[in-house]
Image (tube, rainbow over all chains, first blue to last red; front, side, top):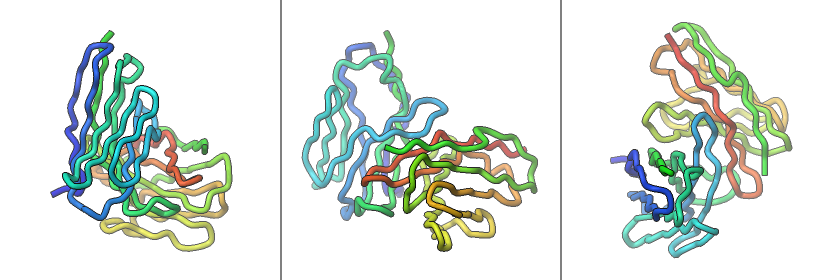
Amino acid sequence: QKEVEQDPGPLSVPEGAIVSLNCTYSNSAFQYFMWYRQYSRKGPELLMYTYSSGNKEDGRFTAQVDKSSKYISLFIRDSQPSDSATYLCAMSLIYNQGGKLIFGQGTELSVKP
Amino acid sequence: SAVISQKPSRDICQRGTSLTIQCQVDSQVTMMFWYRQQPGQSLTLIATANQGSEATYESGFVIDKFPISRPNLTFSTLTVSNMSPEDSSIYLCSVDKNYEQYFGPGTRLTVT
């Protein structure tokens, strides 16, 4: 069993839709949870990170962590064609220099105009 | 933030040869990381490189296959040695700055 599971998609939605992206994990010791966005032929860029359980909001993006269920989510409101990318969840035991990140497989999202 | 460049951006190599990938950061960083992203797979950490010390390799990766240099605080190289088609992948350099991890654009390697 992989430490982090993520549905690879692809996921196709119309512009303006609410998108829900999810990951499950097996290691209950993970403390920090991150979402990265990766455009085609580019490196991943950090969107959001969350410590422990709870919600975090940044503009149209909301990250949720449910440690009891070992489940994290990223919601994108009012999705735009520019949101079309692969979204990777990542998590680690610690969040300082040298913290090893464990990534999900990535979900490919396409937002149609 | 950190701006990271990698060379080459892509290459096609013959099996049995070696390729050295360069990573340059626009500011000094303590730790640099090398990841591999195989088709349809998640990013996997190969090794962590500190300036002035031996790189630390993750399980399944060995120095003879992936030698790493870290001559200063802004530069690192990863060599993929004695390549086989299974080494076809995207190799990404990453740095940790202000508790956020930044990634380079990647080097797309195809081994024939």
